Image (cartoon, rainbow, N blue to C red; front, side, top):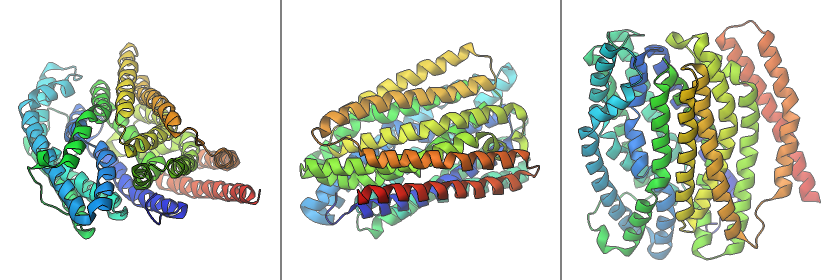
Length: 528
């Protein structure tokens, strides 16, 4: 752990990350719900929802979340060796390399925009509409391409804050991007109309949505850089990364880790392309993916982000005892935070899908499949969060080989399962199996990562059995409460807002039971 850091500090940081990430992810879900409600189950909605996330997918290909995993341990070491000046030096040189790479990628993305647009519009059956979709999606990709470099700046600012143990602004800032895009979509729908077919969409609407989306990312990057300045790590990008051994080591680890980031991004691209064969399918898969990461980032992934600086410091000192203790603590917190969310979403998947499908998307043909997808996501968020925590622990030891291989295996498993969905009729069942493909990939990755980490931690204990047993007992205790809330909602004949209130109050009550039982179990453990 960082010097002076205690289990209470890690818990507090985890809560900070979870709380502010909840705000960001909630606005992200709201963004998807608004886009779906405005654009409806149309092929243009599929093209827009797949096209405007292309820069995020491409950014993930070259760095993405891996940037923090690789860079935070190096910045922590630089802070220990030479203080903030040395940390700024390392950050500046890595930033110079990253911006050079991302600029080249932006140029390549613009050149290949027609090819990408062709793959995203391939699922449109009518040739005339497919041709129109190809043109509109190409224009959209050209407008949003600069977001790749802007995302690099945002993540550099986020990484600087996390390396200094500051998590609030870094976790909350994405909400700014989501709110700006929501405002853009609402204003565009007010001016151009809602539920437009792809042959009715004016070019002006695509321009407004594309420019608004890029402006939102630019504002997010500005907020993250402001946060880096607050912690004293804002620096000017430098082109002299080759002259700094530490910067060279970081860039090499990033280059080697491209597969860790690229494989999930490529898998997501495949899933979106296949979902495009079902009207409104991209919305269902994308919303399921957003719920998956929203839940994991307020539970297990929140813990992993808070634990990384401490794990990196213990690994740097070669303190196996502290490293093992930090891992067990992080794993316990991750499971404790994820289990109640698993139960709530699994039981409330139907009512939740009914609440999320609004406006033009309120069709039974989409609500049922979305409920099935959310039930699968309930399990995937726990598996993916624990896998991410394991990757963070390995990166803290500067081990990028196993995370890279695990990502490759996960990609292969996801694509194979997703390809098998082509044997299923183009409807709701295909969408559910596409989300099952995500779960299958997460399971494969988690198995490899945890197996490797178990070998690394020996002879230290790998898990804290009493803590996990207490979490399981608390989970069982909350099931009757959750089932009762589901029954009340089922017999209740109110509207969406009324159902949301019932689910919210019932969820709070269930989590309250979980917390009380867990606290009692932990107290008994302390006394024994």
